[in-house]
Length: 223
Image (tube, rainbow, N blue to C red; front, side, top):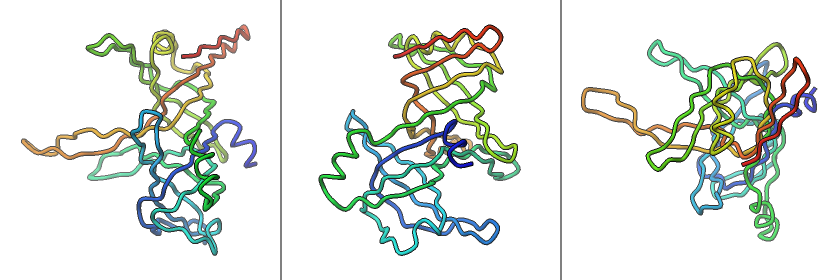
């Protein structure tokens, strides 16, 4: 079952734990914990990614702030209701975790620290736009099926010719994407003159594959 799920939603990331490991919730007697990891980008900035993990995976593991870990799992979404409104929340759901203690091993894993693959369906009309500097961008919302008739809804962002290509795809179209998970801060207005800094998570697409089911045409686009 796990292998089938990972075929459509697969994450591999390496980073440094930067928050306490805290209890989150319990399902059928199994407890889950959360923490944040700092994942470096090639641009020398970082992404801060939330992780959810079963207590059964971290038994006798010395996880603490400052430790480096490699996590394999999925990018999951769920709805959180705050003040009567629904908010889409994303988290890296760990299926396996490895504590990296050797400096050479850490550096080797940090060469490709943030990888994701998704196989899903467009569930909202893509929004295509250009920046003031003329860069092309498209925002997508991808529904990725998982077990028990559930789906994860993953915001994605495409660039350049991938963005131009996405401007013509429709709700229900089947695509596969490869890229990385990125975090992005933004200002949310919470009062007449008050703003709150929040963090959004999305998949930055580096490669996109479009599958046209009716005539089995396959087109691959790479950035």
